[in-house]
Amino acid sequence: MDVRQAITDRIIAMLEKGGNVFRERWTRAASHGMPRNGKTGAPYHGANVLLLWDAAIEHGYASNVWLTYKQAASMGAQVRRGERAVLCAHFERKAMRGQNDAGIEANGNSESHGEGEGDASDRGNDGRSGVLLCMPFWLFNVAQIDGLPEPTTDEVYERKAWGDRSPIEGAMRFIGGCKANIQHGYLRAAYSPSADRILMPDVDRFTSPEAYCATALHELVHWTGNEKRLNRTFGERFGDAAYAFEELVAELGCAFVLGHIGLVDATIEGHAAYLDSWLQVLRNDRTAIFTAARHAGEAYEFILARELPSPSPSAAPDANALRGAE
Image (tube, rainbow, N blue to C red; front, side):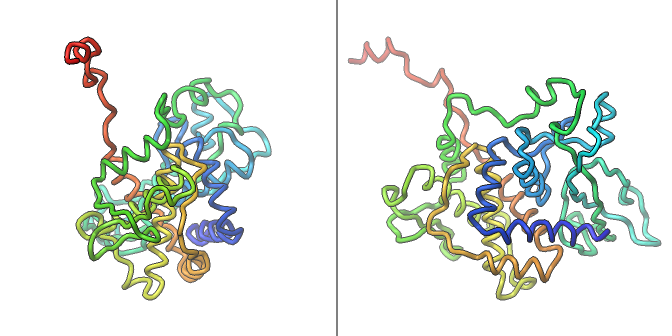
C-alpha cells in the first residue's frame, strides 16, 4: 500500500467538497477536542487529526477517542463485527544498509500514533540518516467498540473543560501570551513578515468577537513561522505555490487551536481563497499534506505553550481592603 498516496487522496476528497464544507466538518468535530488514544491518553497529530475529525462527523461519533483493534482487546473490549477502521499514518526512520541500526531501526509497532514527519528526506531532524517509512495503522472510535470501561469514554480523555471560561477568553489568553506585535486600523487582516507584525482591522469591523479571535489566531499561526521563531520556508520546494502552501499551514494550525479552546462557530474574515492552489499542490506531491500538517502542529504547540495563566484568586483585591481605601 502507498500509504502517503492513500491518505493524500482522502484529504483531496475532503477539500474537493469546498471550503465551507470541510471547514464546517472540521470545526464540528473539533468541538469534541483533539483526537486522543483511549488507552494512553496521548493526542494524535498532523494529518491523522484531519482524518479522524472527518470520520467522526461522517459517522456521527460523539467522542474523539480512538483505539486500535489490539488495544481494545487488551482492555477486555471487542470491536463490533462489520465496523470499518480509519486508515492513519505513522512515520519511523529505518537505518540504511551497513549503518549502525542501534536506536534507529523501525520497530514496526502499528499501535504507535505519532505522525512524525511528512518529508521523505534522507536525514532526520536529529541528524541521523536513513529511510523514512510511512507505516499504516488503523483506528476505531470508541462508539464502534463494546465492553470498554466507562472512564475511557466519559471521564478521562475528553477535551479539556474550560469551566466558567469562554472560548473567547481562551483565544485571548493565547493571543496575549504570544506577545505578538498586533496593530489595528487596517482594511484586512494580514501578517507582515518583513515588519514581523500582525495587521488587523479594528474590532468593531468584525461581525462578532468570535470572528475577531478566529482571524487573529489565523494570523498568529503565520506569525509563528518567522525566522525568529519556527522559521518556516517553502520557496525552494513549492516555488510559486509557496505562499498558498503557507496559507494551508495557517488554515490547519488555526483549526487545531480553535478546536482546542472550543471556538468552533467562528468565521475567519477577509481570508482569501486558496483552495485550488492547495489541491494542485496535493495532487502533484503526495507528501505535501503531511508536511503542512506537521508544520501546523508545530505552530499549534508553539502557541499553546505561551498561554497566559489563569488569574489566581489570591491576586484579586480583598473586599474589606477596598472598603478601607474608600
